[in-house]
Image 1 (cartoon, rainbow, N blue to C red):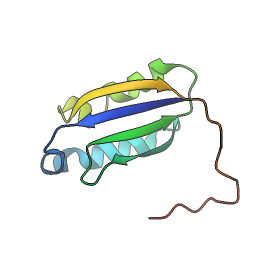
Image 2 (image 1 turned 180 degrees about the vertical axis):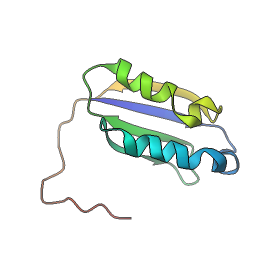
Image 3 (image 1 turned 45 degrees about the horizontal axis):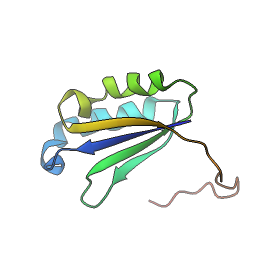
Length: 96
């Protein structure tokens, strides 16, 4: 597994609107992402968890992400992740 971290531009809330739907659609369409979400309130970045063996798959996702293409991501990094405690199978409901 790999984790992709994004750092956003300071004015992400003002600049993301025209690209948000495409960004979220790209995440939803990926069968490699198991979790994703913004970090901070207001968001200063994002975190994506990929269930892949090759970090090139993560880079490929990021290279085509509208937020990256439109300059909303100032930095990104891909880090290997060794899951120690998975979510118990009976806890499938995710709070909104």
